[in-house]
Length: 374
Image (cartoon, rainbow, N blue to C red; front, side, top):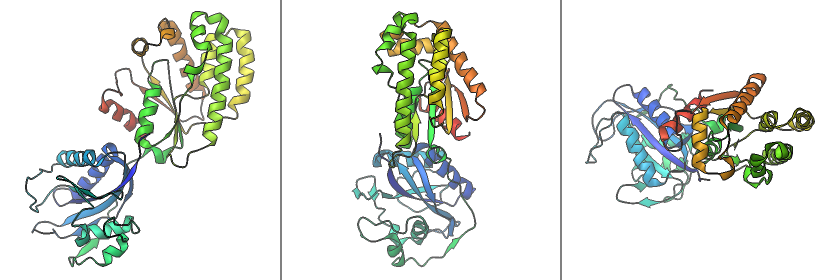
């Protein structure tokens, strides 16, 4: 689990469509740096230290797992993407976007490339006024006083005007959902995706404990004999795990994400059990299902059968190597029938057959963007 730390940034623009540049910068920060928690009002100020068009300035608070070096690199990439040409000199000049690191949590950093807290922020009204708006009680780690107090001592006499423009926070998964369940066929990548999202958004994970089930290897060797004890043991374990973990929400995590949902038990049971066994199993399932919290978002990762077989071979679990394509097709049909029957479940199907979200960041971003649009 990565630790998210508060970071305060100052953003300014005085070239082109300034509001558009600021909004794009905020969106890119949300995609590449962390969760945008707060955005100040937009302030108009005269250019500071040189003559040029007026600036639009804001401050934002971001929660990020990046270290200072990676944070600085990400900011420079965003600035370049938005048209800024990074100069070798420190001369003041007009720019489409300017992003400065004001605070990195409460750390004091003095390096060749980065000084934090920003050494000139206390003398800049266009920084202090919007910063007071979003973090009045933040303690300056060198001055040892609150920002609202430091702002009163600012000697900058330049004019600053609060505008009526409003910039939007990027949609954040952790603020939109309390509980997400990710499902998919065997080898679809649901556990890998669960871990990636958990790391990025500081979520509590609920991972299926399939490796601890002694009936699983036996089932793949003798389906008919071990299907019922396998499915019953999975049902009991999933019910216990989800009941306990969903009831004990972690105050230090943003939300809960699991790599399975309880209905998975019924889907697999429909495929593996004989009719009389399934009838008994269904009675037990219906009793348990009523007690389980439904996810705010149910994601089904679709992988075509050829990709599933490829993924299963790659991960190398001996007892899975003889899984037939026909069995995977039945499981997929079971999921689709379940999804179509659940009118009250917020469901999202994502086709990842041509994606490798573990290897390629752009494929992972595609999934996150798809989730945000729901």
